[in-house]
Image (cartoon, rainbow, N blue to C red):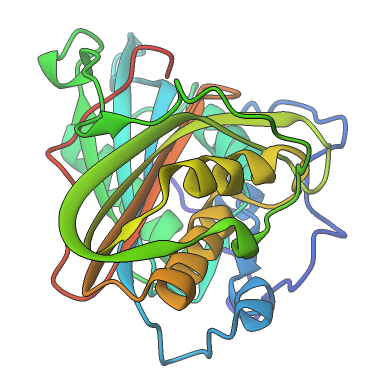
Length: 284
C-alpha cells in the first residue's frame, strides 16, 4: 500500500474549502489528503480559552461504523473503529472529510489489523497535530451494546421555555454543597455549515454548590438553535458552568447521535476528572 503525501504546512482556519455541505464524489482509492483539519483556537477564543493554557482536560471520542478494507487476497473486512482525540490537539477534523477518508480505504489491501491501525493513527494524528488512539472492534462486540448514561435525568420538569439560545444567565446555584450527576437528552445544536440538526445527550458530573435544575434545563435547551461543532458546544457548556457555578470538580460529556456513519462524544473536565467506562446510548 502506498502513502499519498499531504502538505504538512496546510493549516486551514475556516470552512471555506471544507467538503461539508458540498456534493462529493466518494473516493475509490486511499487518500489521506481528504482529511480536513480545523484550528480549534478560533472557536475557543470567544470563550476566553487561550491556546496553550486549557482550563480542562478531555477527549473527542469518535465511533466509525462504515469501516471496511480488503485482505491481501482481496476479501472485504468490516469493523467498527473507536478513535480518541485529545482536547489538547491544536486541530479537530471536520466530520465529512473523516467519512470520505475512511471510505477511501474500502478498496485498499492491508496485511492485517496492525497495518490498518498504523495507517489510521498516522494519518489522523498528522491532521490533528497530536497523537490519537485507535481501536478496532468487531461489529457485534459487547462494548457496542447500548447502556444508559449514569446519573439522574432532569428532563421531566414541567416548565415553560421560550429562549433557544445559550444563555448562562439561566444558571444559578444554592449554598448547599453537593456531589451529583445530572443528565438530559434534550441537547440539540445545528451544524455550523449545513444547518442540519445534531441531536445529543449530555451528562454533567460535579462537586460544588447545588445547581438549580430548572435553570440548568433551560440552559441546555438553549442550544437548540445554536450553530457550532459538537466539541465546541461541550466546551461552551463547561466554561459557562465553571463561571456561573464555580464547582470544585466538573465533567461535561455529550454523546451525539451518529450522522454519516460517525458519532462524536466529546468530554471536558477539570484536571483529574475522567469519563465513565466507554458506553453507547440506544439512539446512537
